[in-house]
Image 1 (cartoon, helix red, strand yellow):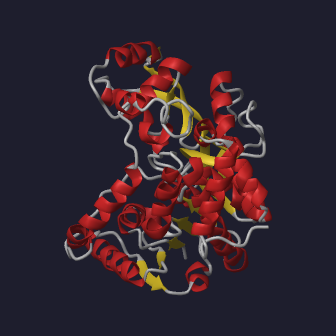
Image 2 (cartoon, one colour):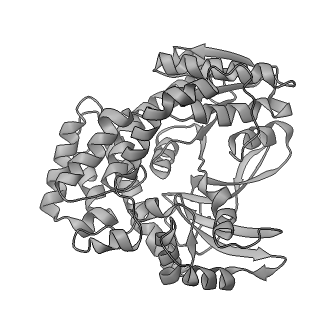
Length: 432
């Protein structure tokens, strides 16, 4: 029997996408779907929603069970999907934004890098590793499909601290080229592309249609694009560094030291940067949840259409041995030759019954590898801090973060880290 365990199943919309996809996949339709979340109300809402989809998908015969015990949910799992958010919007996301703001340090999303990404990683790693320890005992051969941010930091921690087979999965790779071409009014027929780098800062290295290089036309159209729009930071990065980056402008504006600067507040308007974007989204989602609950939880006629999320395709490829290509986050074992081996990279991978086989990429263009390394420094030191419980490495990660170090003095960075550790009391282990 195939058992799919979803940790963080109270993420109802995301559970609908991933597990709804599984119910529409022939090789997964008889699966045992195990739902687990510490929020019992949201867990029950996800259960009701998935039962409705299960009844309304004619071919689906899944068994769906909610669990209040993580060990029971994980026992004998074939696949484990991780979608937890440790600390939630309140108090932890608010903390990640409001305390840095007192130091003049502004952020947009703060879930991948920056001071917010560091602390999101530090409070999530211990929880995720606890689940992995259980997995080592009750489902040691299961694949962990991690969707939680900070993706590179969490994936690296699991790979370094456990024996669990894991990959990190993001939405940005599969939509990067199609969304760019649509935005520029270009056709997407017969387009092929190559993407590699790190999560949220992977690079569209090649993009072709019928053997023709599309980059010259893309750059020409991007330069001529008029008016304010949502992709101004990425267009600027492409103009200055030569390549388009996978993740959104609001994300990348805080991965580099060029865009959010207290000394140059006009850059916020010039590049249309949405400061405090993630808290704003959280407030909007909380406000709209009652209406959405009626639409997706209590609608007994609820159906589903398979999405572009990788999870069900990965499971299908492993079960049927029908190869499938993905972009995934894996340990760099010489895959990208001018990035460190002790880091997680996002590269094309082949999936089949033998598991996940990453593809060799070689050298990235030197300027792109250099940008990646500035982020990798933070990934490695955050993981080092979490696994050793040495506070000095939290300071190191913060001092090497591109945005934080470009805005604050060393003294202010130390003070900010101390304030955030104090504010995270109860959410972090004790650091030495």
